[in-house]
Length: 532
Image (cartoon, rainbow, N blue to C red; front, side, top):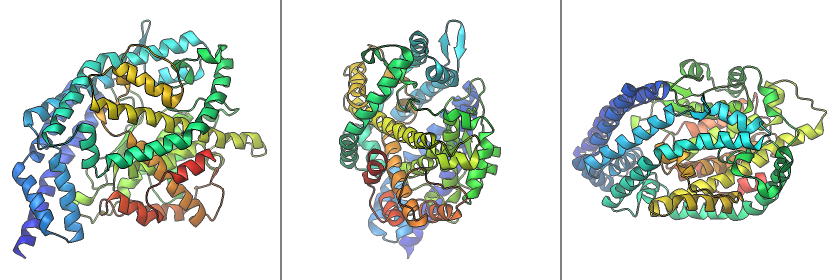
């Protein structure tokens, strides 16, 4: 009994101290991402170092190991497991950890303030993407693509230093490298992740090759070049991570009105109110602000927000649905849970919800319900919605392969020829045969501010398809997985809130997935949905 009280007191003390640091960190991070100011980033760095110092306690780390051996009560044990993993990542040299944090924040700041330059004009990411998407001039898209990639040259040196410092930290803690350490601390098995990606690569290779040929036929006509002359800048995206528009369907035509109102209507229809989330959010472009998008839980008490740079188009419709998917997950977690368990089951489980809803921007049933101008008598247009989503998913799946395989090899040996390695994976998985001796890989922000994260996007896609299969067949009682209508169906919202959101971190992700879907996480349903 005395030991039980000691354990509970330890957990309560941890939660009290960490919750205060957590809220200071989210507040300073929010300010830094919105303003790009030097002072805000300095404050965020200071709080990040305080969090590192807090978790560096060897005494408390040893206590968690001792308590874990003695305690079998599920909720107590689960909290101890999470606290143990939090401490584990910070058990290395304090000065080394501070150096890593400082470098990471410096790189992030450089990404935030970077604007591509063409001539005398500075262009936002939105403008660069618009050029890549709409221009039919090879020289123009090449210029825009190369202008954006220059941020890779700016951060490469610091990023490589951070990679080596992370590896140094991981090895001091007994791990092979930082990649392996990150997976294990997040309760993932490196061998299982590799197996899943190998299976996906094998099962999507031929379907993607067929689609790639179709894309190349279209793009060669659009740019009036031979198929063999197509380069990375021709694929309407900075990384060929989203499918180019090759079908007779301009999705932007359906999202010229207020996409926020469409989002509110959709989420309200499935029983998830998002108005308060949007009221607290940062939604439009401004100087110095992060040009990407994310959702954030500020306090684990209901203050959930998203950051975006909205334009009324399909990309931002999908992104808004995506980020609000993260947000409603956080809001749906049982507020009575202990602080330590008031979190999503895993990074990829929240990605799965975001992706499940984000896909709807390419769904004809969603457009019919929330937009205008959809001629339902035009069967070719309706079919093109599905073909566009399928192309998008397969293109993205192959892009994930590039990122995950490259990052694994990056941490194995950061001194190898990384430019050559990058383009070898682009050729293998995306079938784009190109090379230039510049650090184009470093222009992807995730290597610096979200290391060893990208595999979770793909796992999220797998779970999204697994959930979609269950929703379609068990709730909607339909056999076809195409253009399924989720709108105004509170039963779908109730299912997700009960089975995915409410438990928070009570269960490990693998237990949660099996409880919610009746099966372990599997690539089967993604492959079935998008290749057959």
